[in-house]
Image 1 (spheres, rainbow, N blue to C red):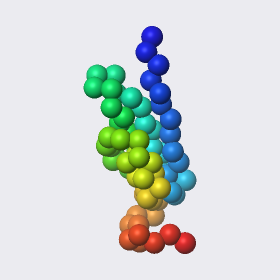
Image 2: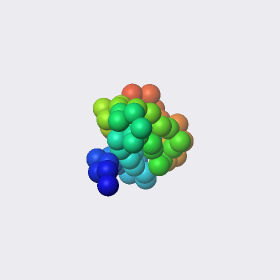
Image 3: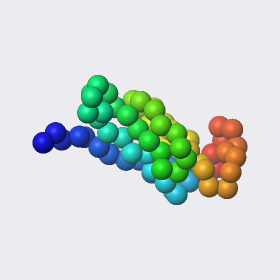
Length: 66
Ligand SMILES: [Zn+2]
């Protein structure tokens, strides 16, 4: 049994999460966001997406968090 080191990060809006896991084929880190449809590669990128993802209420004010 292969242990896929998966973890998740809550999105900025608290309404979803980015789940990351090691891809079984190429062994790289991949992620998918449950709050929007974004996917990508890389633990850091996934974490950064979670920190910036605010899919609740529509458009995110660019680069500004209160
Ligand atoms: Zn997202």
